[in-house]
Length: 594
Image 1 (tube, rainbow, N blue to C red):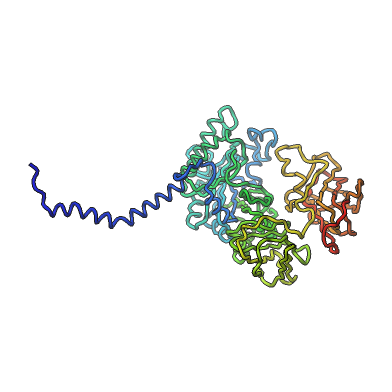
Image 2 (cartoon, rainbow, N blue to C red):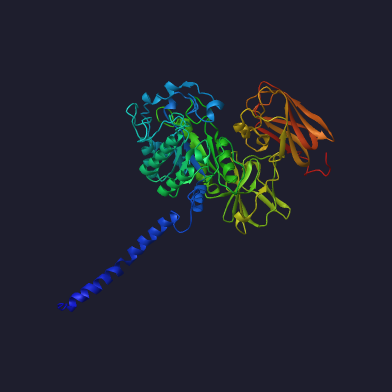
């Protein structure tokens, strides 16, 4: 027989658990919400192949706009370029094409045995980035030479090796400093490894296992990592990239990954040049503050004006900028570089609203671009070519305007277009920023090219000769690079060619009376400017050397087709810029074809 149960016991057994459930309900709900958020981050609510980042991850990265690239290692002892100065065969497609660097391999691979950067302080690095207004750091842990700046368990070719003179896990120090300061951290990791014995051999499958193992270490042992920056591309099968990406995003689902590992990834990476105006796909220009990625003694560093030009142009063309520093052998960032970064930061502290959280457009041109967010357009005039900036018409009304950099502006909007003028005393050398408030969202406006400025910008161009000695490098020297607004890219032709021409189609006849040419290596010894009149090419200007900043004026000329004819050089030149400017007395295109 079952004994009789006390009614008090029943009350306790039934009602106390119910009370507990009621009291715990808010906490259970919070746990559930956190779980749902985590599941959503991992793509459990909808199919996700993990090969590309979630849209909100990419958008958050775009909002940051400005980051620091940091390339460092034992190579700083030599003052030469990281990786590429290593004097040994480089494996795969680079073995024949690139040759060898100037530092003998037995020296390069043993630099860590005498490298003692006793003034290294990751927190100071991070503070420099914060002072610069940079929102993330891309830190190099392994370059093509294979040496690791972290405590990998898979190799002894590392900073914590028994043979290293300075046994510090640099990655840990950098990660800790970034996490403490709230600076996002992206890892640069070169999947090519010219030191590893299995790389690009019949045992390459073993190298792939090594690569995957190292990436797993980095994403497991150093806390939150916000992105990965691979290098040198290749095909997906070279690195088993599909499985690599899946493993990476299983460990850290919020990763953003670049386009240099055999798959498109999440963003493009134009190197040492400005990206093109592009709304359909994110991009980031990576560029050195000096002339090489690793530290170089007495290097020429970019002026503040050049840095602001690059940052603003990247934002205006809808891209990010990762500006590189290479710390010195003792671990410090060179003081003059620190000061340049701080100058950029002081500018951003005043005008950062026109950069952070914006998207590029709608207006784009040479030295005149715009950024936008909400109902606002920020027009950045980096160089004044005349008294008025002419913009195409838009289907939003400008309800108010102001000058963020101080002063006044006159804004005239008609059905035909927009004209903006700022008194000379209110124009700023670094950047004049005019704020246009609209009666609707600025992001709805389609892209439109600035009407004032160089006539040659973005126009159709062809050349008699194009550099093709190295097919992989040809895209760096295409004819269109001479009219893209970036003097650090350009057009050239093969060594041995003495005479060549570059031809620009302006689209319709214009009258012009000024030109600007850029040929930074000063190799041209004789050239002509020509126009097509009927079926004949006629010379309207003859010159000798050009150099980095060559301005010229001439009697007004009217034509649609214009040529730069190079007649004599010392060796193949790099034409970084070819700009023509409309005559001050001309109001627009002429009506007749020439």
